[in-house]
Every structure is written in structure tokens, then in C-alpha cells.
Length: 124
Image (cartoon, rainbow, N blue to C red; front, top):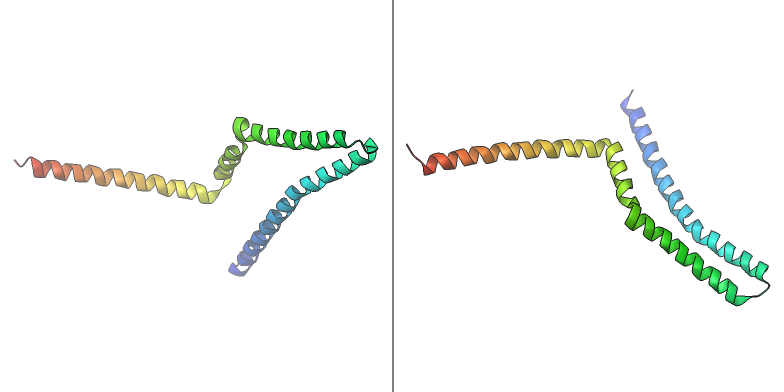
């Protein structure tokens, strides 16, 4: 594959995921719009019973918060998403590979320094 085609594919991929991120942000905002439409629907159905509408709104927000708390503290969704992203990402795999290699080299150098210190402290 020519470098020009690779560059075009790379640019398309970057553009696609940038737009997907924007779509996901918009989709998250639609939750609030959907909730507003629910409240408007309740107003129409309740024939002006304000106390019931207020109760539904409060319970809707509390239920949303409770679900978020459950997903955050019990299920640990963000941690699972990050773990899955790391396991799929070739960049993370390469970073971990380099990290492991650096750890090995540091251990080798530490062992050599310890040997030199032993030789210097215990001359024969």
C-alpha cells in the first residue's frame, strides 16, 4: 500500500473517530432532552397536578443518580472500560512492552552496581 493511501486512511480514521466522539457527546446530551420531554408528557397527562410532576422529576433525577452511583461504585464501569480499551490498544501493548524491558534493564544495572559495591567494599 502506498504511503499516500496509508496517510489518507489514517486521516479518515482520525476524522471518523473525532466525529464519533462528537456524536457520543451529543447523544449523552439527548438524555436531558429525553427527560425534559418526559416531564412535558407528564404535565399533559396529569392535568396540572403540580405535586405529582415535581415528585416524578425528583424521582427521575434520583433514579438516574442512583444508577450512576451503582455503575460507578459497585460495577466500576469506568475501570472496566479502561481495562478493555488497554487490552485492545496496540499502543498500550507497546508501552507495556517497553516498560517491562526498561524494568529488566534497571534490574540488570542494579545487580551490576550491587556487584561493584561488593567488590569495592570487600577487596581481596
